[in-house]
Image (cartoon, rainbow, N blue to C red; front, side, top):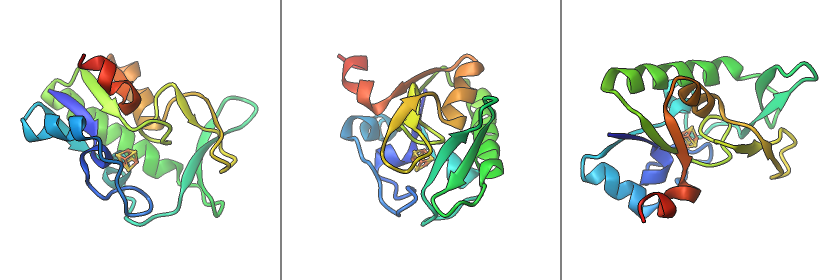
Length: 147
Ligand code: SF4
């Protein structure tokens, strides 16, 4: 069983009420091979919501702030924790998550400047899953994953 980002399977859970459907990922859910989760909704945020990015201070502490400057870190922490609990409960070992997101991004995330610029790093959920032994891929690696 895979855990996948809900926006990748056509669920309109993105901050702007849209999705980022990837047909192959959606087929995994339809065939019963994957469960779809949106950590930001699990964390208590709504649709639509403010666009958010991770901001790091000089000491390496990460916060999630909205474009309007609101600190929403606790919502992202809660969503990550709840996603990990679900993953542990059903024995998830592999996740396919949405690239660059402050929750789901893995390897690269937006850099906190709201200029579509990326930096190395992980979203809150992707990082927590990886730290607990889940192998994380993004949808950008999906084709090579199932070749
Ligand atoms: Fe998609 Fe993850 Fe953002 Fe939810 S939190 S909209 S699943 S990228």
